[in-house]
Image (cartoon, helix red, strand yellow):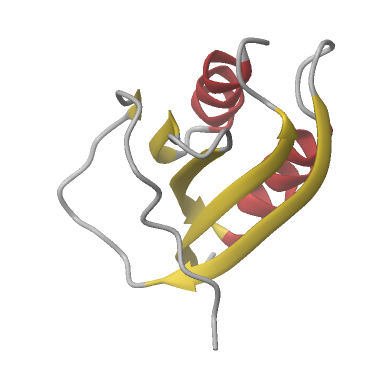
Length: 102
């Protein structure tokens, strides 16, 4: 299995609906590491790391979101692996760091 890290940004009705907690539960259930947070522009973004197939399953769930969410767009891009994490965290709201691939 090949490990990879993917940054993601979720657009739609994704704040105030438990999206970050949903993301953390999904990631933890799959054994993935990384983080998720709300952004000041009204989206949820994060990074997830693990094997390719598991990340694909995780992204399918994130693309649907929890019951009260309405996902209209899921952006993602590959990143370099990190060795400094050992679990999936929910972080405080901040400015978005997500940049689309050129």
